Image (cartoon, rainbow, N blue to C red; front, side):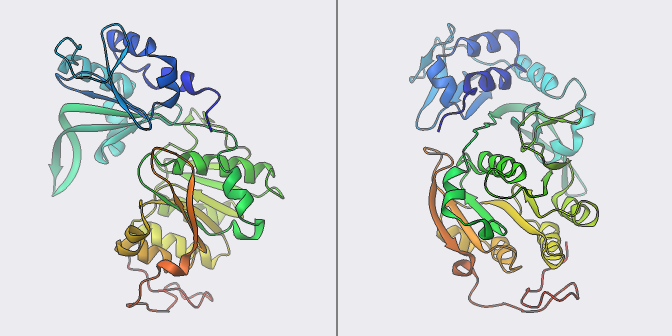
Length: 341
């Protein structure tokens, strides 16, 4: 399924770049704009555009070339740094928390990944210097992206979904459309949905206004997932909480507590295969909270949003080291012990 405004999304995502680079990308062929997933800039290398099954170099005329040739215009260090400051709205300091995690989120939910030299403080990354590359991941809004999933699941099965897929497999796009359809009652009765949008990708908030259509959701923008989940439970009385890319110990503990409060969770994790779901320890701990009833495995980046399989969560439980204790002292017996963050 193609996004109706795919070209405009591409143009918006590259609007932060310096004039010469931006103008070349605005002239890029419309067909590939519509399918573009990432735009990569590296110092002293040509600009590259990654589509579903192909990647292209950008020529001086804004054409798409599949070959690396000597006449392709390269990105200078000055152009890269100028683009970075524009991405940060000329206030790098205000993005320090994001920069610690190696990205900046732009208006519309486009995420810019950063390459460079880590600045360490007390053994932790506290910043980045000597920037060497930028990777713009283009956010997509596709109404109806969740239609297949909703048609294959009954309304009673929507609480407790874990979407798993490799990068660029469409997890965030699916979550956006699930939030929209469930909150508007398109897929049954209207539900109170809270979106915990730690990285600003789901809603793409700007001055309190979502840049992506999430229907009638409450959005906790920039909240760490663990804290956001607990705040939603305390003050927003949601039927469902939707969040992206869970996996940290604080996230797992908060999800377990939300389950005890009777709130359903829909979330995503990075895992491209069933084997990865079984082998990654944090995913095992996440599943053993019993907050998830179904695991939705997505196909590869070649077919973003397509479903490879729907599985009972029990299929991925660890075979051993299960402690069926409720760590929060509630009545949710059957929960496993969750290590504290």
